[in-house]
Image (tube, rainbow, N blue to C red; front, side, top):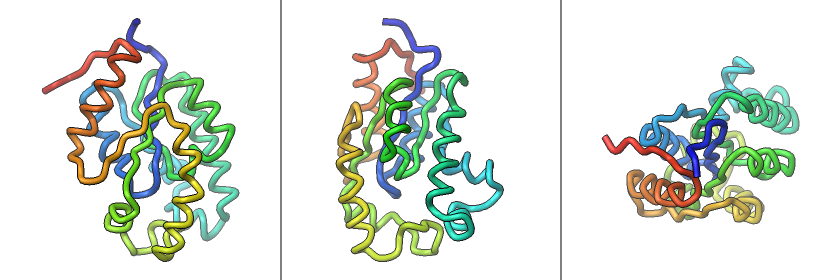
Length: 178
């Protein structure tokens, strides 16, 4: 096994599951760049995710989300936090499977509801019942990830450690333990 030169670690999961937090810590450990799809979309569009949904609609957002994902090809290795719905599109899933490892950060509904801000910044978060319904519809997609990690009641460092152990068996990687 050799260290991948153009491979990605894609963090999959529902909004509020910790993809960005875990992703930043994982990238630090690997000494790899970190990218957050939602942050890239905001930079690309020059407006918030909520504004994109409100002004252009979800189909437009999903199109841009796929374009941003595909634009990452050829940039070298990186840890990438996907949007909550990114992995639910067939074409995105195919790209992800071809370009790296997908890891579902599986959080409980209670943890998700506790973590999510109720300030309008999450356009698909309206009520707890709607969140539960959307999560239930997305779980069959998330379950197709290469690795599933239960994150509830766990420290970020422990989750990162589990990912690193799994990656050692999959790819030859160098880890920064500092």
